[in-house]
Image 1 (cartoon, rainbow, N blue to C red):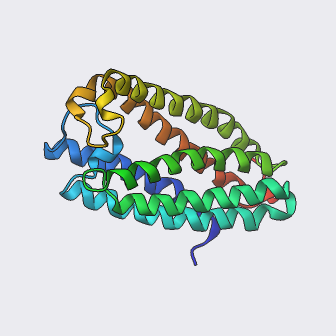
Image 2: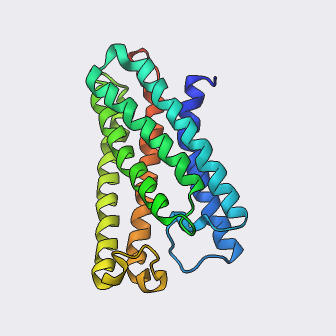
Length: 220
């Protein structure tokens, strides 16, 4: 098994690299439909799909392991009920992220949307429950989460609101998952930046776990 500190470092760095690299590859390949685009639109046949699928599949496995590492290292110096919730949320994030990596939005839209929403929602819950569980956590980690978690909540509601406005303007898409993305683009112009902000804030929350991997034994 990889070392705990390395698991924490890989837990945020691999997803960050995957998003940046797949998005850039999607842009440079000329395969992008419009700009800005959703993160998952980079899961397009070609080199960007290889980066997207491999990166997020590996990330899901690592995050599942990281949720256990956080639990193991902090269960004796934490609010046990929140720590168990943290463990469950972390595992759900990892499992859904791995499934999402293989269920691209072009061929498996229902599975993709379901698992992506689970990653974001359980990701926010993971950050909150971990923050509440580790009562005497590292000061730097706490400060980071006090910024990243509210930002992720704002971004999630901004993303949801923008998409909802687009669906209200195009009610035929509500029961039809095969959206005309070109017609939705005026709202994607807002939803996409919110999605990237949501992903960034979640990655920053994951980075904060690195400070708490040793619980009370390490203080900044």
